[in-house]
Amino acid sequence: MDTLDVRGMACPLPVVSVKRALESAQGALLVLLDDGAPRENVRRFAQGRGYRVQEEAAEGGFALTISGAKVAEQAAAAAGSGPVVMLIGSDRLGDGPEELGRLLMKNFIITLLDQGELPDRMLFLNTGVLLTAEGSEVIEVLDALGNRGVEVLSCGICLDYFRKKEKLATGSVTNMFTIEESLLKARSVIRL
Image (spheres, rainbow, N blue to C red):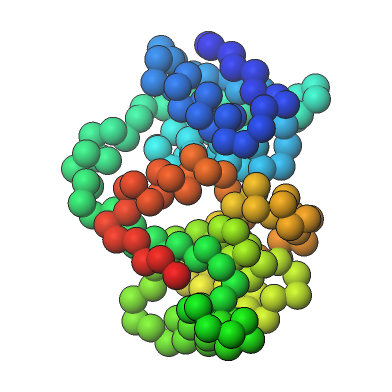
């Protein structure tokens, strides 16, 4: 079994390193990594590709054993039928007055609950991450969307920048690798 140590690496390097290691691995891969976002991002990345992931506490962090066959054949067959991704890069909608923009974004997210078709994934970047942190007026709505199968992901770098990572109130922290991959594999991207 190959071993990969990504402890101490900044986002998105743990996921990128694991991706490269899995491409050349001849069997299971043991990944040593830090708790928190690196652990969650690597686990989600591997499971999203059909790998089995076993976790256990290890000295200075966690050890993930990633094993099983890739689902590349399924991915190729599903090309063109990827997810619908909504990219939210601001806590406001439109270019008008700030107060109006915040009200419009709030109402947009609230009315999503009444739509028959929902996005598969909502990605929050830049000031958009403020919508997923404590104090946001749409936390309950985003939780309800999550309960209906919408994956709510907030950029970890953005949360760090606004000092909101510890105040994330809904969804999960993600990294730029996952954001890029989501956009590139999407059937359609809705940008707000």
